Length: 306
Figure 1 (cartoon, rainbow, N blue to C red):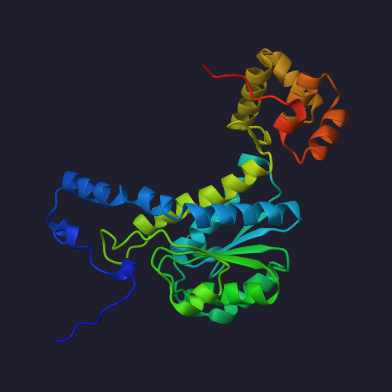
Figure 2 (figure 1 turned 135 degrees about the vertical axis):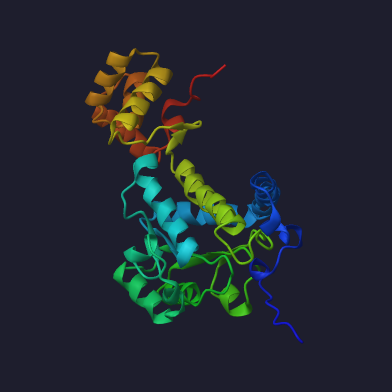
């Protein structure tokens, strides 16, 4: 009897895990770890299109545009996760990076599997978010075939937004045609057939981390590798802010706290105030003129960690 073949590698059976149902807990860990070990290499092979996406995101942000992640199921949840982590990490406005998931907020905690096939829902969701020319829309579809994502990219293009696609198996022609940038970390068959929350999900998380973090670095959200645009919205972040200021200024805890208070809680402003001997307004103006990049203002690297 003829078998129904699926061209999507994420839906194919993995010959290395066909006996996984007989495996012990330790053997399951070893099998899954062996599969997961291939993910970083798959992502690294996409270095050039990922770099183009970083450059596009930076250009979008500098022009006042926004980045939207669009996906269904696990892919959509990963987009919402990455977007939601930008404000506490980089002090960004929540509108700057947004996640749109098929099925809406309810799909974050409860599967809404049919939502990925409701293609006009993608148009409605992007319209509700106000996607427009100058924005950057990144579709996420592990299988490369999600109808909701394809329609979202087509609509984004029709209103003048730039587009990219993150997929973990080569997408068909129509999906390719909807993306200006194509990022395909080919992770192959999953340890459990079709469970794209595994290797494909891991690869997607790595790619999204690179896009937003890379763009934020280019915008001056770090000095060296220090997170200098953090906003102290809780005790952990207040402690981190004080430690960063203390490290680069060599001030004690209380002095660092006082400096941050004069800087309105902004780590970058506090650092420039101290290093240039200026007030908060002058420090903020210097940063604005330098595109937010501390190194251009103070003309030095952060202190050596050795």
